[in-house]
Image (cartoon, rainbow, N blue to C red; front, side, top):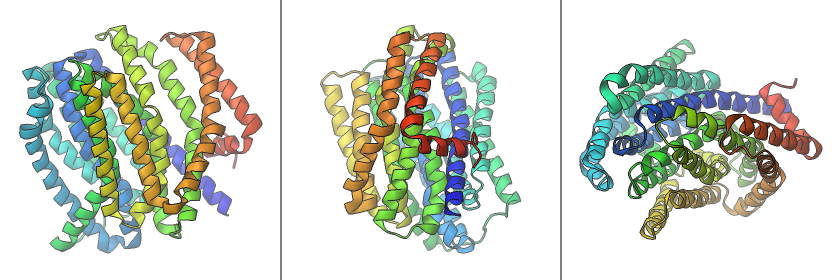
Length: 495
């Protein structure tokens, strides 16, 4: 029975990952369309800076898919209305924050850009605030679906929304230019909301009611503090984009494209873990650090198993099509996007390492400690980036600084989640890297040296296939049980 439950959860994680990857493929395509139509200039820098601010609220919305689950599992009829009221409060706060940011922060953060970049950033924020509000509502409804184990339906709603964004982009940008891009994001987010709401109503309705204002305000504070881990991760991105903008015109755009690529990897490996295991931890965790550490190790190993092929696919298969699609960018700029993405790629593993421990922190509602730790990491990141820029470092150094601080954030979340067990769990993470990740890195690196793809699609595909065969062969010999378990979860092998 226990084995069957484990297979079901792993299957749900993989299916959610595939659905999330589909959604992120749409995001990657949208990024490619932006690059193909607008290139890399001050206006795109302005949009991507505004988009990185919007993404902070997006991540708050995504965090609701985990932070609200314990309360919804405990008593949906009482806590559901309180959470809805909290989301309404956060929505009003987000709208006000966007106004302040547009007029007070953007002029300072984009001071090194031409005036057109600053204006684009302000206009984009003005258009994006409805999408930010909808992202909060989407997160709460998706959390409700997770408590009903409707993971795939929620993930597909986001995929449909991204598809709608592409449609609006194609329709709006010929007339509106770069301002059509934030409008496309609004259209996609609204589509996601409609699909999620329709699914929830068909699957049991919504827990409606009239909560007390004080209760909703308390919930809003809890949710905001609970989101601090994910928000801190996005603040690292936002500040890095701002620092990149001081390097050269177009640098912030290049960095943003690399972040989009990494986001696709995160969606396929980390987001499913959080979505599937949040209700599991809330219902079944015995509140001991030992059991949480075992769950963290299991999920880390599952994610580590696919991390090397995923990163290799990005680096080996991406440059060729990108140079064709992004014809407005020169080949050297496209190559720089993928180099920066490769430097950022360890973020996938550090985020994965922190995912289950952070769920434990959220389940125990240690929101204040979470916010304190996340805030400290952000301060370190800002200081590190300031040093890099002052020393004349380029985009690659900005990316390296982000990777270092992501490691610090992951270690902090691990320590906060499992306490004295952190060293033991970190040791098991280290063994997973040696047993699962390093052989994959070696296999794909050797294949790349043999084939020498040099950014071309067909040789890149040949190198990836050769590396995958070598990695799969090694896993079959040394880690056959874990390989078969993953295959079973995907559906390639009968359970």
